Amino acid sequence: MCGIIGYVGDKDVVQVILDGLARLEYRGYDSAGIAVEADGVLHVAKRAGKLANLREQLASTPLPSSHHGIGHTRWATHGQPTDANAHPHLSDDGRIALVHNGIIENHAALRADLEARGIVFASQTDSEVAAQLLGVELAACGDLTQAMRATCGQLAGAFTLVAIDAQDPDRVVAARRNSPLVVGVGQGENFVASDVAAFIDHTREAIELGQDQVVTITPSSIDVTDFDGHPATTRRYHVDWDASAAEKGGFDWFMRKEIFEQPRAIADTLLGRYDERGQLTLDEVRIGPEELRRADKIVIIACGTAFYAGMVAKYAIEHWTRVPCEVELASEFRYRDPIIDSRTLCVTISQSGETMDTLMAIRYAREQGARVIAICNTYGATIPRESDAVIYTHAGPEIGVASTKGFTTQVVACYLLGLFLAQVRGTKYGDEIRAVVAELEQLPEYVQQVLDRADDTYALARAMVDVQDFVFLGRHVGYPAALEGALKLKELAYLHAEGFAAGELKHGPIAIIDSTTPVFVVVPPQGRDQLHDKVVSNIQEVRARGAHTVVLVERGDESVAPYADTVIELPRVSTLLQPVVAVVPLQLFACELASALGNDVDQPRNLAKSVTVE
Ligand code: M6R
Image (tube, rainbow, N blue to C red; front, top):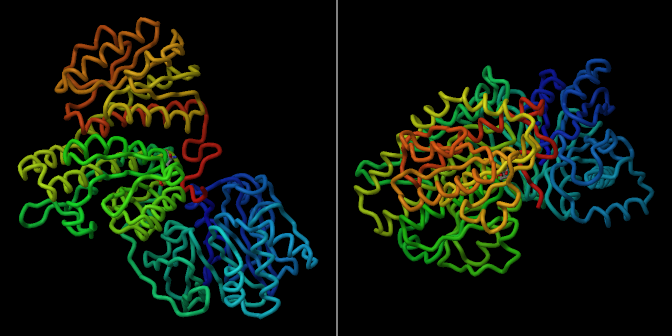
């Protein structure tokens, strides 16, 4: 978590950094801070709370003009979100300022050692340990880049560090291990940041930094080495979206804008997936057909919403490929001694591509000999870089902390992967695959139809503004859709919301249902008769307990009408694809209810977009 930025150039440094932090605030918003150098002295402003608090402080007490500076927006791990614990941190002698993202695991031992040497700490953070250590190393060698390398060599854990030296007005130095860092390549100016969004207003040229690398930027140079000072190879790329994609575009929340972007995002995710012979092709899957045919098990690994996308994928992939498929929470995966080997194909799903639990699971899986395909929305992020292959979801930047277009495009990418594997393994004929792809290509239009009726869902949400408990039910692929609906409501409205497999309800959870509990039910399409009828029975069971039933059902299905207090109509799609349309009203409902409650929809309490700690 945490967003960090460093800038060197002729523009108004404070403005560049504040604008960058505004775009990075999705990564954490417990505090924000900025440091600039002027006339050989470092000036720091930092405040607990959102960036708005820092802006207020700077409006009354501006920082001097400068040519280089660093900024930080924090998601607290060590130490309360207070002014003192906010970044940047200064070294004891005031010569360097540093910002940090990640967790320094050996901070206690380092701190004790530094204190024994007379260093006085100003905060409780692990980050200040890095600042103090860097200060000591700089005092010893006099060169910030060299001091950064020496510091990194002593740190354990995950970190991106960015620092400036009061006595070196043209240089920003940064380093990374297990935490993101990109360089923005400008003209007469350069940037470092957690994410390209931070500098997208200024340049779309970027360099991705590898593991254990240090970068030194001046207005006219970018120099990258490893921690030992050897020149490192890097990869430069062009960012294929611009600043407008990271603006709200007339919506009140990024989340609402992103919900409405889903038709485009899904269409983009499906683009260019056929070759000239009419074969489904996933260019980014650079694992040979032999290996894909050899795989005897698929393990899908992800967290949160991405995990629910993986649950949907299991049904589709097993059905199309007949290969056993497990879905595992990344945070649990490596702790249960999973049975995987070189015949296991792991599929990891991550919008950000930086989720630490998922990254650690990938490393573990690869150590056991498994091949890993990442499904990811963020070009050049750590997870795709450390995987054997990647399918990008092309959803564009997702800024709202609650994932929406991230989820639907992940599900679509999983369908593509399932069909691709079915093609390679010969478990589906070409015409069968093309028929499913043709239906996938209809999904943008179907999602648009759901969005066109958003007002009905908004009215329902506003009518439920006093409700405290919600239940979401689904069977088969409707079950993960129900879980996702409940998660959206929890994270945005801070209400008790639970998702259950509809058939499981009678084994206990039905006890919580009474006349105060709205129950949302995702009804499968009628094509799967048994599945459909069982869910209709489940609706009757909760109705009999007095629940208000909100039924999401395909157009023309009249069978639920007698048991539904509210009907949300869905376009007709086949069962396996239904989550993509069913989840949309649930996203709209959570967004509207949280807005009605006065909550910050884009930055819900206690959360951060990119979870880079385990
Ligand atoms: O970036 P990732 O897809 O790896 O993130 C995984 C989860 O942290 C994420 O989906 C989280 O659950 C969202 N806040 C859900 O809206």
